[in-house]
Length: 294
Image (tube, rainbow, N blue to C red; front, side, top):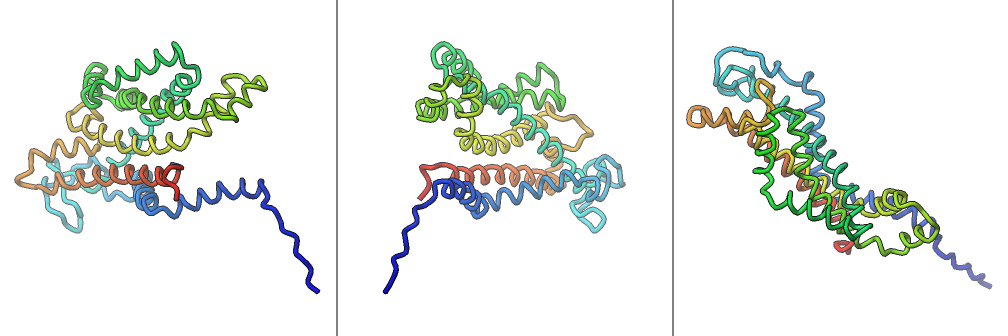
């Protein structure tokens, strides 16, 4: 005589708890996130540990200029006789610090404005979105050059300029996501119980529009690295003798015929870091975008 085993219905709390674990599992298993995130983590460790792993001080004059790679100088020396590897390592500090601070500033400026434009609509939406369109109508690098030329080249102004220039993409991304979510049932439920608008914006809407923000932030970091290198190349970024990849490329172009390796090393560093941020952003989009889930 067999006894029937009662069927157990799935627990809603168990399913809700397993969803974040499944998302983290997909994040960690995504090949693009592994490659891009792994290289970014490596670059961050190199920048943080620069005083410990750099063979020499980046501004120390060691001897003959333009020496070829050797055991004492694995990447050779620059036109002043400074160790190229040490300057490349310290240059990662500038690129990562400028990119992270500027994109953090862009997010702080763009996210609240995008939320307000998508939630309140009307005059608030018109003013915010038209102002964002005005900034986006100018080529980014041209606008950055103009503002830095007015303010003067410095680390602080470089972060400020890139942060302000890249705030409109955050505004548009958050604005579009907020328009999709503002009519959702959970937003209407919060409104029906009399929740304050600030609570709805930052405690109800913001957690549900984080996915496109994370993707945009990752892509923006690569953009900021490229803009910082471009401005430093033009002499509008961090000033010598501070080690900067863009400045190293600018100096190396004068010795392209005699020592092409001097140009290749910082160019490879910039390209790999930008590629890593873009690869990470593509991986985050693949995992977090519900339209791409199978």
